[in-house]
Amino acid sequence: MKAVVQRVSEAEVGVDGKPVSRIGQGLVVLLGIGHEDTEADADFLVDKIVHLRIFEDENRKMNLSLKDAGGQLLIVSQFTLMADCRKGRRPSFVNAARPGPANKLYEYVIERAKTHGVDVKSGVFQAMMDVSLINQGPVTLIFDTKIDTKIDTKTGTQT
Image 1 (cartoon, rainbow, N blue to C red):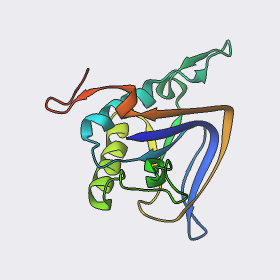
Image 2 (cartoon, helix red, strand yellow):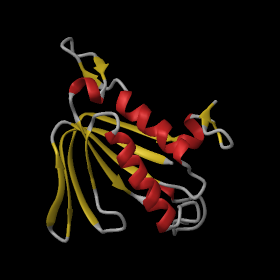
Image 3 (cartoon, rainbow, N blue to C red):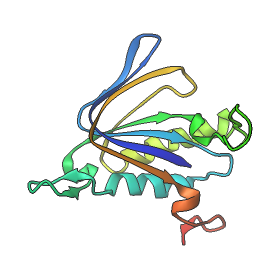
């Protein structure tokens, strides 16, 4: 599972010229789901994103998490994050999960984030979306659960 996380002062997702979701201060997560990804990957990623201290405190130090700052979360599915561009001029998407399993994990990520008491909004799975945001900082972080952590696939625990 890959995620591009951006700290924003505001963001919006639209489909067919109509707004779908909008947030104020918070995080935009562009989420790519691979065919090997599991709920354990999702659990790790959501926990990391919600608790990551990347919001400024009263001393302008990045000491506050999304929860601490009372920020919102906008999660947008983006299968192109799973692209392999190493060969040729056309990206390969063989690492991306099929739509059924990907949508299931996407919805799982959204529901899991809500369990942390965060105001969560989302894009529309498999839609052509217009995403606009104002990146605050700028702060942009990239996560890959296959690189950032090892997850025991038998027990679902982080190692």
